[in-house]
Amino acid sequence: MNRTLTILAFGACVFAGLAAPAQAAPEMSLTRFDCGTPPAPFALNPRFSDTFSYGDLKLQFVFSCYLIKHGDDYLLWDTGHAMTAPNVAPKVSLVDLLAKLDVKPEQIKYVGISHYHADHTGQVASFPKATVLIGKGDWDAITSPNPAQGVNFKPFEAWIKGESKVEALALDKDVFEDGSVIVLRTPGHTPGHSSLLVKLPQTGAVVLSGDAMHFRENYDAFGVPAFNYDRAQTVASMERIKKIASNLKATIIIQHDARDVEKLPAYPASAK
Ligand SMILES: [Zn+2]
Image 1 (tube, rainbow, N blue to C red):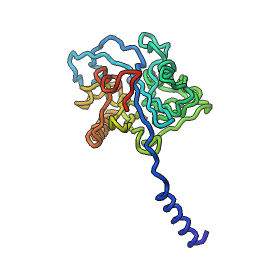
Image 2: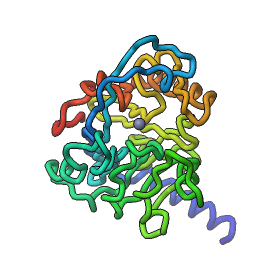
Image 3: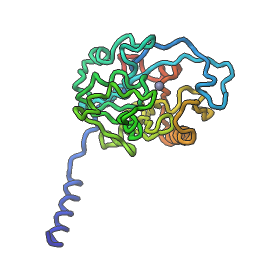
Image 4: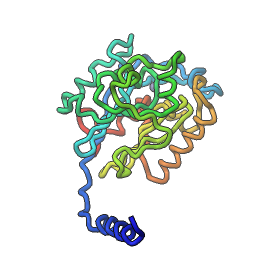
């Protein structure tokens, strides 16, 4: 292409961009699911603080998954415990929870995985048609010839074999390319840990924590669980989330904190 043609083509592209009709904003919603049965309250020291911060404080953890609707597309964020998990299995499977919302498994375009632990990955195999979005560090751990203890690789068999699609994310991912749903790199709990930013038309910005932090006290005081992969990364990721919260006036939802469940409408209702 000679120079004049190149300039003409470039001009046409710019003009086409300007002339395109404004796209209507897609309908969006965020629904929370119970994805496990809470165990009895337990003492947080020493497992959930490497500085023994919490005295005798006990908390009951909940297990959460989320459905994000974006126009005709759906993203599922985390898949909870397996239905066969001892003691903590969900009462109702994700497939059945979705059915009540008239969503079939094959309509799930993306399954975003915060990290490779069993309480976030247990039911991923129910969505073989979905593209899995997962941090590269976690995907590398899942596909390692000898996965480390705690890496719940088994339900990813179809993705490991290449029968299903996966995007191993080295950076943040703007899922629908309009800034409304962004997978955030928040490593530290695991090597490729991620959180999710969702900008809802009415509710505003929401951050789903994954396990960047496990409960409010540990977020407020930069508490680091003793079993985390990397202490400095954990603190940096919490700092990132706090800055996003302040800049976007975002609602922070700590997925394991029972006190954060009520920040969203109770299933089957959804935040818009
Ligand atoms: Zn967890």
